[in-house]
Image 1 (cartoon, rainbow, N blue to C red):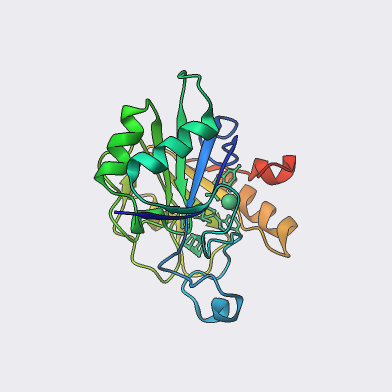
Image 2: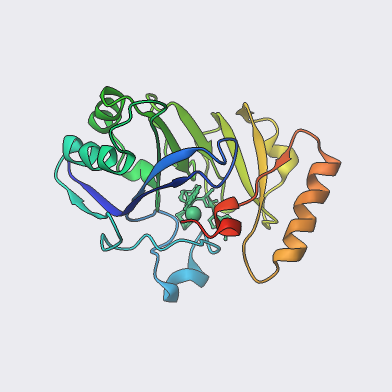
Length: 210
Ligand SMILES: C[S@@+](CC[C@H](N)C(=O)[O-])C[C@H]1O[C@@H](n2cnc3c(N)ncnc32)[C@H](O)[C@@H]1O
Ligand SMILES: Nc1nc2[nH]cc(C(=O)O)c2c(=O)[nH]1
Ligand code: SF4
Ligand SMILES: [Mg+2]
């Protein structure tokens, strides 16, 4: 299978449990909860997306003919050092494209493979780190994993109900929109009220990283 990739870049993981870790990001094109077109945002299931995942025209993006070609590009971004290789598959919705050959070739190249997913598609069982970020109005089938990352506040989601899902870590991440200050306070209030949760900040935005 070929892969449609919006962009690929080396940075620090900005969010969640692995925040601060050197990582190659592969941003797959396309999502099942929004077309990515601004004119469709108001009618989409997921309406707060901060990301352009349309097309293959970003830096490092393109159509990759097969898994070996894609993994060669990931290795090119990481560099020759084989220590602590870490790749984050994101999008868009990466589970629309992630498959056995891609996971196998990334492992052959020595990468620990993480995913950022909305959880509406079952996560590939070969993934090393599964981060699910649920979206109100969608059916989340992937209710177990390493990290549950709730963008908050989000009408239509009850954090207490999510506590029954089987995740090793539960994080709340402030919704990045025009009400940033209130959203920060809402996240702090949630953590203070329910200590099962902890705060995830989008540190790459604070630092001006990609
Ligand atoms: C762009 S999404 C791509 C991966 C996948 N589609 C998902 O939603 O998890 C990457 C992460 O950014 C989060 N995110 C998207 N828009 C955001 C916003 N406006 N504020 C805070 N986090 C946001 C998502 O919830 C997800 O955890
Ligand atoms: N630095 C950095 N960290 C991230 N963590 C999750 C991201 C994403 O868009 O999936 C992201 C991103 O876009 N940049
Ligand atoms: S599910 Fe993820 S990629 Fe899709 S629109 Fe929502 S935040 Fe963006
Ligand atoms: Mg992002």
